[in-house]
Length: 206
Ligand SMILES: [Mg+2]
Image 1: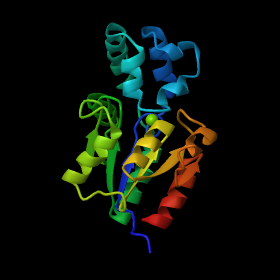
Image 2: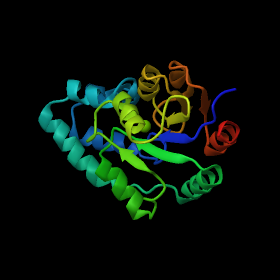
Image 3: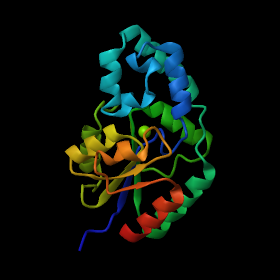
Image 4: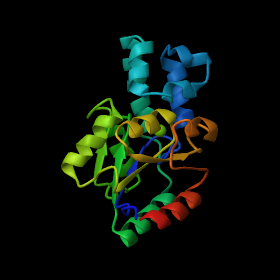
């Protein structure tokens, strides 16, 4: 029998906050990403930080992060979902983590503004490491997380690929940057369109 899931590792943007449209807007205003006039989702087909560094000059990238910080910290999580997450966590004795390509400060500020900072044991962002593969390992060294007792929830193919690299199972969600067909290219365990579906599935594996 499969080991029960004891840890849920969440991506932040596009999963726990509805931030993709705003990110796209700030990006279009401040940077010359090659994708400016293409599909914004291209940035997230691989590691988004590497993409930015490769395709944008340093000054513009700094400008993006500066403007994005201001906007990102203003985005409030949906309290309703968080209440459900909190209850689910408590009921099943789970641990919650965030690994993101956003800045830790932005995530922590957004959580603090909504009085939600206590739900997560750890928040690892761009400042800790640019690669999510490394962030999974950092969590392993600090907590008892591993690829068998943990599951990752994300909205992007790039994240699913990074999780695959370190043998973590992923759940893809379609309410962020990528649609189902794209997420499925990474062979996630499941792809869901709503939190109700996510909770139904999690009930079975925790
Ligand atoms: Mg995301």
